[in-house]
Length: 466
Image (cartoon, rainbow, N blue to C red; front, side):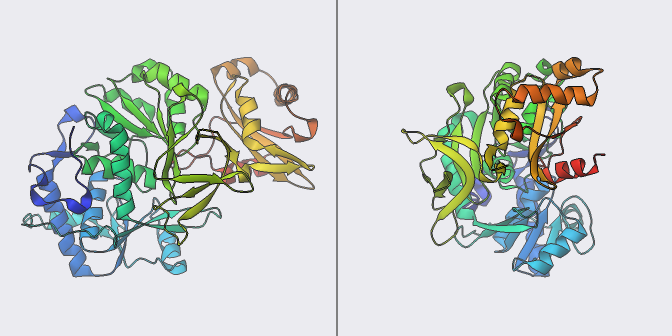
């Protein structure tokens, strides 16, 4: 088995200069970037950083190669790095003006925006810079990375973590699944500006000597080009759902792939179809930006989640999962999630939805995921989102996407006839007062970069409905 070298322990001679760090397109395209080019690129960027100054830098690059170079160089220069998937001028102004985590400078790898340093331009202008004789050391306990998330309010929310916890996380993952990672090349459908994509799409493969794809995969059909070698696919449930529903899913069958999924709920039928299409059950991770990885499962063994050994789990009075670990950066080391769980006697647990997904309709408590699950059980939809709305009283509304069977069943029917079908279907399980009162039938549901449903946009769809 290969040996993992943490980012903080890298030396000039850690790898041969010709060792491949990342690739473009497919592995067999031979469009590779090497360890020697990494040493040169980081040296050039360090010179720019030291000349510019500033303690806090925001980094955004869709190209994973430029992202890696800038991220490493910033840490080597003892800078605090902020990552965000949004780099619009208005968003940057909001971050700088409303938070103590303001940024002094911005690195961009994709667009030469005003008041930002364009990574490719910086590197190309200073190609004469030699590779250094040594690499500056990184202190993992004093090196911080800030992830900007939307938060519960939709406003930018900073979450600050140390490099130390990231490297501990990686060692934990490799101790369990290193034999699956090391022989493969990594490709990802997940943005590296989010913690899941950052850890698994870049940091884990790079520090393990595993070549990774420098471009994010956007649509399932791109996987058809990856039949040349064995790949480890980093993805989200929403992408897998789209993949198994393409017109000819077997065209996506790859050479002995492994699939890691996180960032949302993977329905059992999608897990089963993923096995049928790709020949492998997805390895699922449960966690958050605040907690990192907490548990894992493969649904071939059932719905229960198996906790990692570095997390101590309990439940609070609302039956929400409470996580205690060294990873959590607050004085107590404890984070209370909003995830409702059922704890099993052996320490495993089953997710039962979110606290904010339980609403009261005419004094009756109802779980929105439970309603969504009953709709999915019809076998007629590929996606569904149930939300609570309010006019003179609170009520439920449902937005659906039909699968081919649903499209065939409801072809030619008026909307009120389709609504009547769902009402009769759900009356088998729920009282009349909690049956959704409004319905929308869509080609797709709005989702964010991680494949999570954007409920605010779905609410707008109902507001626009005549």
